[in-house]
Image: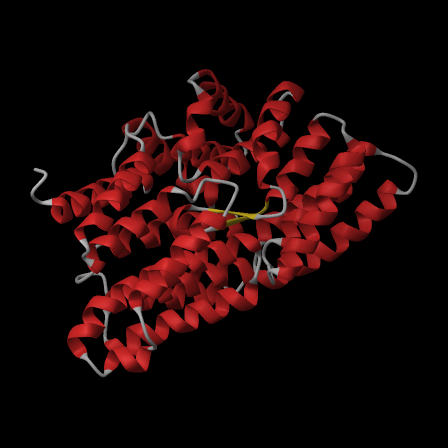
Length: 390
């Protein structure tokens, strides 16, 4: 009731978080989160406000503009108040403020990942580790380990990803979200190492159980395509497009959904499908596409825009998008991202077929084949060699 605004705000924030992270389906997480924040501000309780602000930030992860999320992260850190050392001097104060500070750092990490700011991301992870270690606060340790795994995925340090998972496993009994976080990251590691086709049955079961979840459908479609069944992937895409596709704009994984489906279209879709996805995805140009809570990274949105341009024979626009994708992924130290962009750039050149394009494509293929071998991305190497031979 109205006499318990703090309790109502915290419950609303919890509901909003679950809808935004696909634990629940069918309601607008953003609307719930904004209502929670409004109530929390009247309750004058920092923990309640921290919960509500985090829920709102997570619900906004699908928006192209990151400025509101960055501001929410700033507010959370400010709500935390003081340095780690100052908080550690007062255990009661530490327990209350560490939560807000850790939430804020978690939000900032997501923004810096999408902006490709590798230095800011590394510094934010280090701050999370400091909060977790000095204050002995378990969630901050989990967040730090999860973000180290994400950085490992981006930078091609796959052994480090598994080491972070091992650390997270030690927290699993006390922090139940660990299992779901690891499962989501396992999808993206399988993608990098060419094992995504082995997850088709699992993704089919998830899609059947959550028919309204476009994110799961997009993950299934890419798994089908990666497993060599482009026809099944296109059927999954067509089903999503026919089922009120645009409602997904309010989802927190909307950018990732567009990127996943863009790759399916690039493997055999129509110019009309490419034009539709391009119209939505172009708003993410200049950013990396990330999964919910930063549990994975798909690479630069411009890579996928270039792929869609190839389907539409928009050669000049596609060339610019690939150049921008390479620049951003280099800035982000995306050693595991760049070989994929180079592969699709080489395909683009081969398809365009202008004078010198074959020679330029061969040079890209040589470089990406060598790098994918070093990183253990053997499926990508096989595709590169098949492209060279075509």
